Length: 131
Image 1: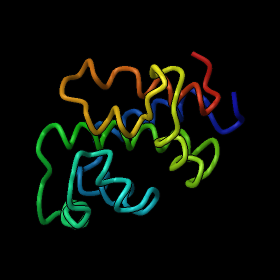
Image 2 (image 1 turned 90 degrees about the horizontal axis):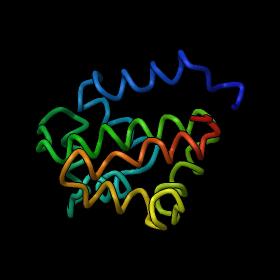
Image 3 (image 1 turned 90 degrees about the vertical axis):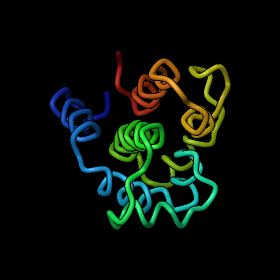
């Protein structure tokens, strides 16, 4: 386990992913991953809508909000262990824990809670968090 990953930090990141206002989640992802990446993983066609979410001018639909929250948690785990560039790469790289799918693709196409369930364990494993 990386020195930066302790149980309290893992719980904090998980709690923040669930409780942080969605505008701040969108703003974090926009800043750390970029507007186009955030738009892709949340299922948007127009990246400018991410800016509206981040500004709090518009609230995303439920499915998009769930994609953002799961993306936020995964990004925080990886950025904590590595860096922003590594997180961007992780979202678009094939992942053996996800049947060789890219995490961003899975998030973008997720429709039900079951569709999300493997993304966070894959991010934890990549970040060096042993389950």
